[in-house]
Length: 453
Image 1: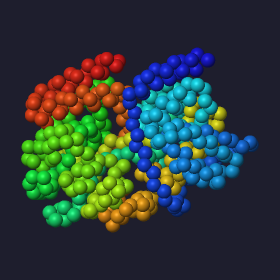
Image 2 (image 1 turned 180 degrees about the horizontal axis):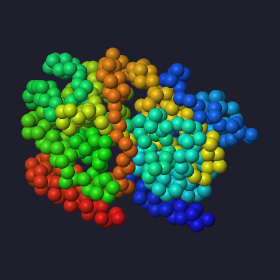
Image 3 (image 1 turned 45 degrees about the vertical axis):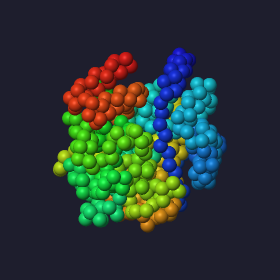
């Protein structure tokens, strides 16, 4: 009873903390499954239930999107009924997490819960709301590293399985690459990126094409740390990471691009409220660093019809000889509530959903055995202009991606990013030098860390 009271108190604290934060990265495309790549069904090794079992599944996705996949599982697993709990009627994961916490606090009998990122996942694991899956994984006899590209362990315990995968790479205007006599890069560094940017910059005035565009998000001031396997956050294990070689290289990269005129000026970005989609798809910028949510848009959209072929390149490394393609990784996670009375049946479902279920939905998955060629075929089948997607480079980027181990940012990440961006903007706008920027940003972020201890 004391444990339950403790959990309820902390859920209340969590609800307040979550009121101003959250994220949403959820894209689905329908495609038939490929049975030749199906994962071993965990349910096959589990003893059938003596009585029919109902599993309550909570997610923020619209019910209409989830019903076909849930029905497919029920059809292949007699005796299992999946009852869907829609956490938001508009696909809003932030609102969905607030609703989830209210339901848990009120004693709602849920079994399976989806979470839209590492922070949401780690928060609920830390509160003791999620069941450890270690024994169930051991019982199935699998090695998680053989199954998923992300290790979802938190302090040695697995409380959820990776669902979708979010990582970063570079989109390139292949028509402009061809015109400049440039190959689609596979192994390259930030120095190479700047060289490509220079060669892809042409014209003057309103018709000028810039080699690259950097958006306003904090990640664009962190490019030389988010391509590292460790210490890739602004704060790592309570230690502020600003006074570091990686942050200096990140800022100098931006400065060199601005000074040489190969990047869209940051002053224009903020004064004209430019958007990364329009900068790339209108041809104003030939390259952008972005994430896999943009794959489906490479074949054009109603807002931005495809007028050129989009190619894909791995995330650059910090220097020649280092491997390209390393990127921080995130995505959705799916776990089981500690109080679930059907943990084996719930586990069988989340194993299926995060493997075969992902294949059926044709999403960018954390499952290592995903049929990449089938995924790309599904993307092209749903594209307005499938011939404008460079299939070869897309396949290379997906098959050679190197997602970094899970690194959970602190719950006050939003505060850190706001303070960091405030100082870095002054640097890129020539209002303070590099060392002043590093020193002030280090001090400001340290204040935030100390206030949240």
